[in-house]
Length: 68
Image (tube, rainbow, N blue to C red; front, side, top):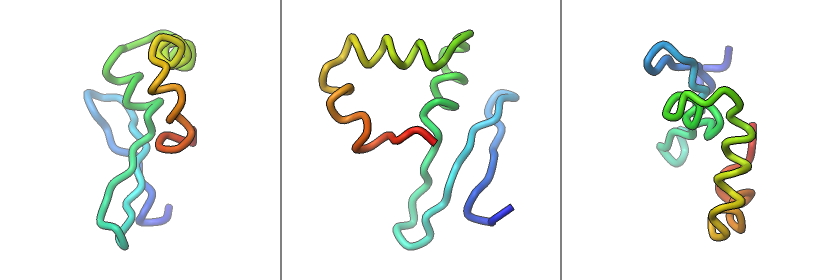
């Protein structure tokens, strides 16, 4: 596995991360984070409902949170 890509465990659940050495930033999978924090049975539907309730989040979704 590339050293910039990794899977970390948070409360026993997998979270995909990427390290950007140039910008010195970590990028996390939003789907994985939502799954860990909400313990939702269907995380994709949870995110879909969240986006439908928040028009600002929905309008910026692709710009700052592309699905992996």
